[in-house]
Length: 275
Image (cartoon, rainbow, N blue to C red):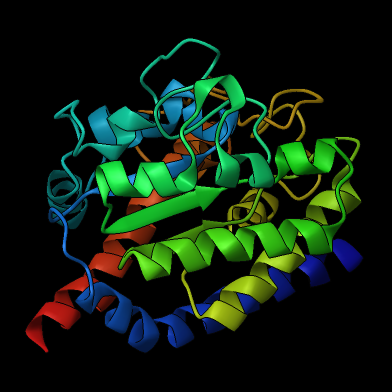
């Protein structure tokens, strides 16, 4: 019963956040001066995973709107305009250009881990119109207080907004052995999204909605925080049927990201241009 209440609360918070973010983010979008459609994906190994970009790049079952938003964000160009390329390209040290294995929120701000650029350097180089941010699992591994994590995530959001970049935060997945820490962190992220009035992808809630009791070993690797790739007949490029979305964690995350980016483009960026 408590788990159902937590999932319902997360969904309600996400829906309320969607209603609240449009007007303030239109003001952010109006300040943007870079190349149209540059969407970065900032994060750790969950973002660095090659399969995260699978549905956007070659996935089945796209609507015409999905195809259009993937084209808009330069998917498949494999260059500095293509955020799905920048987050998966292999660089020495277990990282890409915008995601790094094992990185914590404070390290993402500062740069230096495995040769990662700082957030300020990333923004200066790529000047994104939108940025999807998922960090926190490594903070939880390190046992960092939720307040400290939230403060660092707030600095990341502020830096993006100051750049004219619309931030999209994402909750982290359930964490085997650290379930309470993940819930606390995700509560902090929901609070931050509400306070800053930014979009939020409720990845945790979407996992729990589909696999409330058996996510461990299905949508996530067995006793592992990383989303699964090929499992139960589904893979990152499969059609996003309800059955497939219950089996491949990377399909679920990639599909959710494309859908949220499309929502932000329609509700924020396109409307800001028409104003």
